[in-house]
Image (cartoon, rainbow, N blue to C red; front, side, top):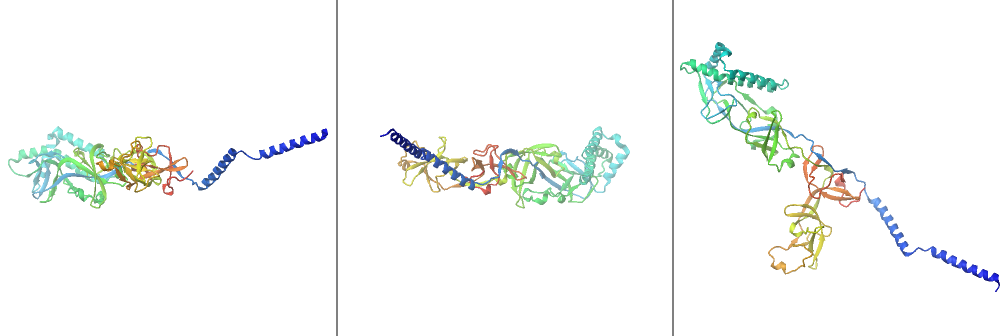
Length: 485
């Protein structure tokens, strides 16, 4: 064979090898094909998920508090009685308005002809202010100074009543001095008849149409000041027999009653005592709280005070503020709140000793199977749980410990019910937390409802949302597990 032929043969073999190598290079190894298939599958799933996911309007959880001032117009109730006059005549003060007196003490005097009032004027003209005691003169100055301090030209009703207050207080101060002087000069002549109190208490020479008001008679119209009527008995006034003469307040204990707004029920429902600020009087008192249904079936709050009622003896309406009304927590919109139903299980049937709580559930074959659960809420006796692999009607084992072998003989000898059938459910309020693109239900505890469309929720409630987490703004549009962005 010639050299040329050998060279041709070698060249042909090399070409064949090259063609085979190129052909082998066109095929990928099996591992590469598997990886490529996974990538393609992931790409396809991602495309479907992108088409399926929904845009969510979210809200970032932040701390907040109720913005309302919790100021109410309240009505005062107290233990008091109106005493009627035993005779016709002209009434003159003997006891100071607002003075505490004992039984059988003289409250006022009644003059059938009006001579006493004339003699009092004569005594004042004859002796002037020089014969009045220093205490009486200082009392005059105090009464006038107090009126000047509280004077409000824009409030005619208070100005009107203030005239009677001044008259009452000034006549109170005069009575002791003048009465003693007239009695000294009367020389046994009876010019008036003394009216004595039959029970001890605080004497007030005023009365209104709310004196006999009872708690069960409370209704919304009573808080309308235009319905209120106050009458004061001025010195020298003619009073007919059996007409109101004075009011006796049996105790300085009193109560304030005010309409209870719907959003306030949760705030005060568990309160036993609350602190009230009496704004105009500048007084702060703590009282016992309760609530009740009025005659109109509406809800009202009542705060009872065991004393300190003296500054309010002349008042029926007061503007009050709840001192402890600053409720703080997480502030979330109402639209973010929804409800979800969960199973309620006695605590004895849930094992919480491990990192993930679980229950032991009887299978169809009578064996026990471990089922992991999430605790949504804890009460005194029960857990509210969530689990994907339990159903209504499943039976639970009383001692849910997977490390203890199950012995069916225990069920016949035990004095406790070792089986519990899962039926009870409860509805829990919560929000949809957005976690890694999915909606996750988290329970909340509402402690206050604001007037601007928000709830204040308890920061310390177990399993609840945390500050700065994002939640769905409109819970009604979603379900748990929705894929969102």
